[in-house]
Image 1 (spheres, helix red, strand yellow):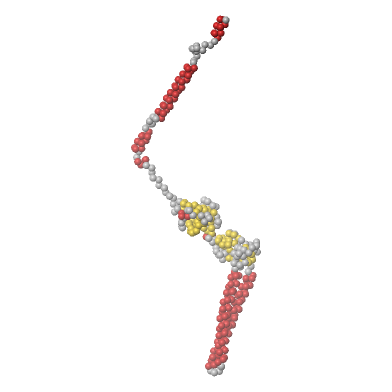
Image 2 (tube, one colour):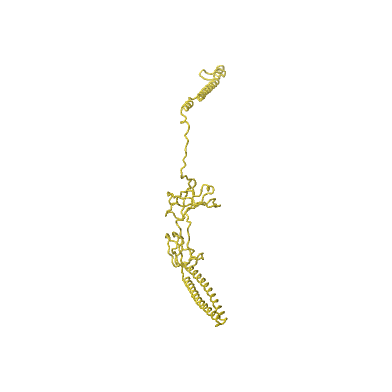
Length: 348
């Protein structure tokens, strides 16, 4: 039993014995960790402290050197030079857009309704003032004119007859007066001759008035006859041909596909000008006679000299614009009515 007890005692672990020399206790490990943390913190403190010291080190004296260099530099080199802005003579102060318009443009028609028998114009034709453009059926008007002229001849012939009778009545009155003075005729014959002469004088005045009326009627019929011939009111170019022979023309449309209100449209190319709408907020920059530079949309690289004719003294409430008329100085055949145009108002 003693031997077994000794053997069992040898197998027991004695908790009071010190650890082996080659091992490390828990306290030693903890101490080593604390020392490592302390050394690391010290190293970090040294590192960041050095960086801060480096950032706080005084910089090289570049500022003072630059200041000394600036003081040694002449004043004329340090001060900025004055910039002189030269405004161009043709400075554009306002832009606008508009259209080419004609001041003289007319749709030529007849004063009366009639059947068109002849049209003598085509689009693009140059016409002169008074040139015949078309003719209407004038058969009835011709007869009326002939009748009126015949009436004039009738009244003129009656006037001649009255004048002859008046001359004879004056001679009869003279003889009756002489015979009455010699007691060869009665007073009644003298009175009768006197009344006859006065009646013929009244007829003469009436015949003269009838002649005036007949001549006026003839003139009226002649003008009505001339209304059947449509003529150009001014020099220009035909831009639209509206009617053909066989159609009916009327001053106001009477309805129907064969009734026309005009024969053609004529434009006076010498009256072309530009009309633009300028925003009323900028109308103060525009004045009469102001120089303008225009560019047609069809020829954008072509600069056309122009000038302001007038500022229309009214504003468009809906668009808040004011209309301006511009004269075209450089006339050219390429400028056509209703073309789009852009303009630039110049300062000088």
